[in-house]
Length: 445
Image (cartoon, rainbow, N blue to C red; front, side, top):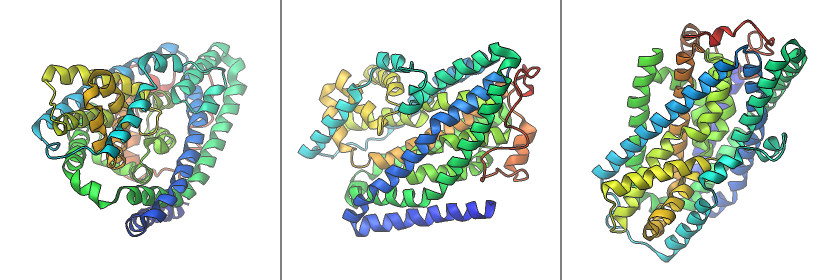
């Protein structure tokens, strides 16, 4: 089966290249293929809620002390806050060092596009975001596809099963079997990845063309380089100092997930596989189940860098540069707002426009300058966010005693390959018995 899946991801690479060719040669045809990419991403998103629910319920329900779960969540949120601040600072430094916005001119079409994005950004604020974590009903989190709502329901269910003790054992066993089922369905969906990648890439290339890429190449290149340095230097150093894990080995292990994100421009398409691969690598189910989905809403390193650099770029392009104090105030506001827009398609652009509309409305029209290339910048945002969440999961696991480094080294060395057929370690992981005497992976540091 591993050979077959290797062919699958080779097919994805071929599909991406074919999509680029179609988009350049026949732009109208490329744009017409967009539903193929949209449909594939929708299939993946369909599986996110049940996978998060099963993983968290099994992880929380099998840990005897609820305090262990709180420790994981608290450390994760604290780490996310610090890293978001670091990403903000890096974006500010780079944005102030370069001046790519000079010489660009706004068109009427760009102003209209900017107004549309500002309307999206205004639709979500911090209060709406916090209230939105609570689902309408116990099951509506699954039907609406809200990650944080699913996380809340799963945590409540896991704690309830903890309280039930041995009586909750049959329920945990049943959820373990359901987890097997949903991961098997996900493995089946992955065979549609080449079709989805072909449609997604053809559409974006057909809609963008070469002109926009040429005129805005400086800001794109600067953003990609900044994201690469953030991942390679900041995250790489943290991963080695805390967990003694080589970053490039981890990125190579997650290579198929990066390819999936690159071809669909959506980090959510790799969320279920990240949970499965983190567990396989030696991160405890509780840590992976809580840190990964929470990170997808709160640990947006790539988005933070994008917001800072794009804001400074727009201010420069429109001839209205921001003072340092204005930069800090505006960007801290947008970082908070970005949490509420995390589930919105094109969230980075919508948050940028909404933040400018609230604080510096005279700059909103400048958003139209980057609408054309936002999809390409979205690729870097998604890849950086994903890498940040993978590293965060290992770090939180290390700090809470929920990371088996010896197993990780075996897996990263290729001695214990990931099962692409089931996405689960059948013999070791699912289903877990409830009320075990303190999860070995959650022992105190």
